[in-house]
Image 1: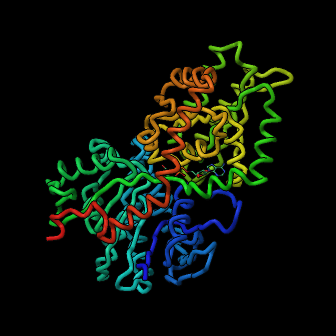
Image 2 (image 1 turned 45 degrees about the vertical axis):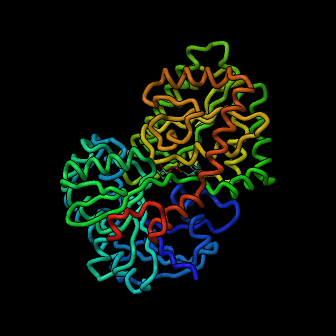
Length: 468
Ligand code: ADQ
């Protein structure tokens, strides 16, 4: 019998059906990962309750057992909106200028992790593997251990782990890192983030690296590794062939006759580099008067985390910038820029990517970035488009055949657009083939299997020093 897997993440939102609207990178990946395991997906329901009761709501959704719990609104303010999204998210994305440091947030974060642990405890059987996800849940293992849980517990960080000098901006950073040593295995998206974590442990906690991998610090041992996340590649490939995807591709092709479509798809987040990207497109239009009528840029960015001020501000700035670009360059029969703030079904997105000659993916920092991989997976092998990708997305480590750019530089973005639009078909095919191979081979199934094998102690990662 396969071991049960208990997945824990802040939100639990498995896609209910076929072409449902996408629910973000993490949710898509976890739903795909859980399909193959019997087990449970546990987390916050997204609902609030006047008083925390720890009552579980268990449902079967899309082949997955989802167990959720409601939180008090102060929990949501301090733990989710506060510590997770106003403190850790900006810090881990190198935006210390936007990070709020408030002790009440830290206390709420700890309290909610304890509440999650207490609610989850009765569901855990002795040989279950437990896999916690992302920056909301760093102290979960510590709380579970305090309740006597002896199971193997793993943690995967979907966002970047910042450089040591950035990390130490966080008050009580040592306490947060110490809590990570209650896991058996901690996984990162890239070798770079893993190294940054190790550097922190060596410098701040007098840790040592063990011969076979792994770390010793705070009187404990921890296995660490990097596990780049990928798409549910087979499912996405199928999605590109649906009638809805085809219809969307035909629609986009029809409304861009004689023009090349440049597409960006992101959650509306300051880490995604949208302002710089808009300025890059504006620079491109300024530098290339003869190409202006030959392109249309479509940026899709549904609002997210609207309760956080920084997100309201960026929305206002982007609205103004998109208006300025169209005001400056549009003609009576034509406008260069489309700015759309809504979600699309995944099959429709596949169709949009498929119609785009350029995929413009330029986050300032990104743990991985699945949009880059989706864009590649949706291309026509006989006439593929060109991916322009930020150097600071985790995906850049695997996708060196994209045109890599510094996302802070509108000029570099403009130059890359020129190059992409002028690229001969033979070069586009050569680059795309290499990218498509990576996307197909390093998919979400491999990510899950590698992590779970390492957590179960069957992976190559298990250092000899830990076995003794
Ligand atoms: P995100 O920051 O959400 O994920 P990303 O990896 O790009 O970023 O995933 C976004 C997902 O949302 C994609 O599947 C995309 O198709 C979908 N999406 C975006 N805009 C959409 C729209 N308008 N309509 C429908 N769907 C839309 C976090 C980390 C990433 C990491 C993932 C997975 O920040 O770095 O890659 O988790 O680990």
